[in-house]
Image 1 (cartoon, rainbow, N blue to C red):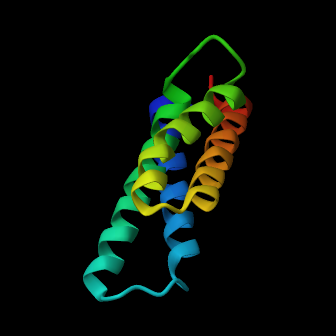
Image 2: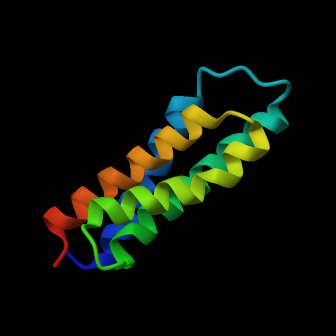
Length: 105
């Protein structure tokens, strides 16, 4: 599968999964809920999009983990919710790297 198409598919899946994880969370109002979910979707979408298309010279799972962690740091700092955001970002990148290794040409 072409890496660009794989990136779009992975990004869509990761973004959707992250929004589903956030559904049970309580927010002060609907605007903050929409902002948080939009931000989470975009962040995870970009992780999925970039992992198949970035080559750092190592194993794709390591590249994915680094990208996932690095791209999640700003959100973790802003929200002061470090473990869930950094953990999910790192795991999302790891999974994207493993999928990339398995199916990319």
